[in-house]
Image (cartoon, rainbow, N blue to C red; front, top):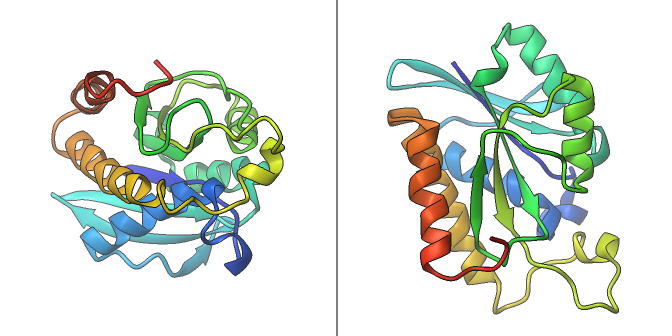
Length: 196
């Protein structure tokens, strides 16, 4: 089975903010796979389906970002899932808008949602996909920036990244995470994106 978690904050106030791109990728997968994410469970909203004879669970924690680990921990325990089956998708300040970065493990990098998940799982050795949102101008606090919407110039890049993230998940499902990493991380290098 696969447990795919997108991070964000619940409620209309946060729907279009940079911090919610993890939710957007889950919504993209929900649309592609016709798996409605409508059931309240594990302090989140989840949907279940089967893709190529494998059970897939999509999860959007509703705990607010800083407590995301509570939802992920509950889901893993309930599903009796292996941590190797977990993928967490979230925003990253150190990648330019629209860039993707897949990793097998790593630190939270200052991301509070990831800090919470690492704390609750007791390890940072789980798959993650970062969607670049870029850094703010120096005069804008990071806390305000991540809770602001994308600019008109950035929005097409983010839409493309969300689609590419869906493709990367498909590659993981059909082949392997290593193949997805090679394919989508190399593309960032080829395009000369920042955050290498």
